[in-house]
Image (cartoon, rainbow, N blue to C red; front, side, top):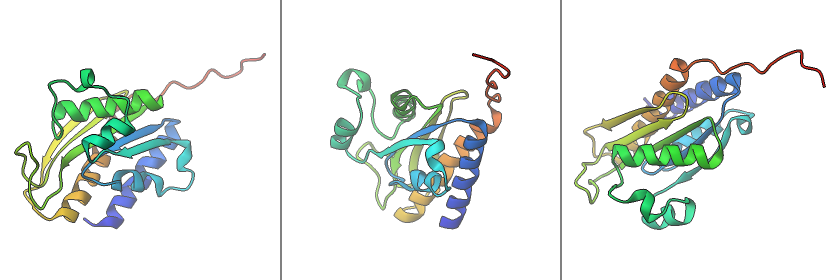
Length: 175
């Protein structure tokens, strides 16, 4: 898989969101913005993409989210609970249909929590929550970043495909 596969997946997911009239907000760390870039590659992305953030450090989390110490107590980065919290936070904060989060260790070495390079946790929050932990077994930073972004968008696409169709707005109403 390469970057063109990532952008093709982003376009496909964007088409699905637009067709359903749904929206997305993203929080990513080790993917470094690739998830958002892929979602924004589609013309008219502002119809479904509400915003995103790369939370690469504790400082960025403090400055770019509204999460406080009480929200994160007992959690560590690069874990399923952390990914779920970020996905829910983004969806709620942006009032989006879907929240998508990625948190991991791209490499070439692992993180301070003992996770190896190539480890990431992914979460989708919304009509059909999903989560996944991925371990690529690779130390190559750029390959891991791409793998993380592809896996996150694939997880989002699975959730969208499995979720019930949104209710159609009532028609024929007169004022």
